[in-house]
Length: 236
Image: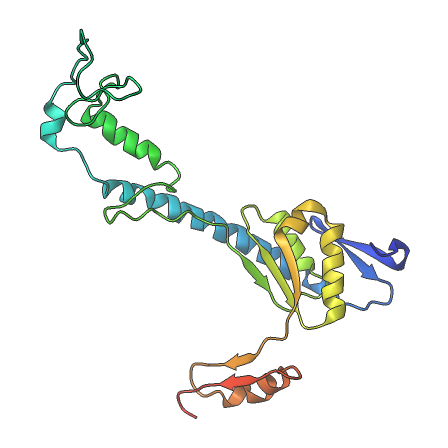
């Protein structure tokens, strides 16, 4: 960790960043409201996404194979003690009936089987649909912050948005990347586990709806040394 006497601590929300006294990395105080709104939108998105996922679970359960009515009308069979072990006893002493079911296990009615199937679907992670495919687990969303500078926005996402996944902070300035990594460590284990910072000079790919001519000047200026520029358009 660098000498803290060279920095001042800026606190915003639940995150704190180290700002060098020479102001090597840009910090825009006027964008506090913008970052607050972004966090509110992320929270709402994650909450709605979870609600939609849970709302789809009953539909998956309804597509599960159901027990026929004829099976449901049959009463549960009672275990009958044997004077001598039957021929289909296993080596471990457990016996099976003609259907391959252990005789010492209680038979379930149709209602109990359906209830058991629904209980297995509680989180929607182990349910198999009619095609035999296991329903996908709802994974935390990942967030990309381009031109992260000090990493303040990424750090606030990690510390203030419950249910968020990995936050990837990118910048094409080495001083900014160094500052972001320093601030990640400064914000403790939560930030270290969720936020990663990278130096990236990505190629510029311009593909607007319509003519790209109005974007050419700014796009060309965005290309890094040694990078490349791609443009496509329907009416060049």
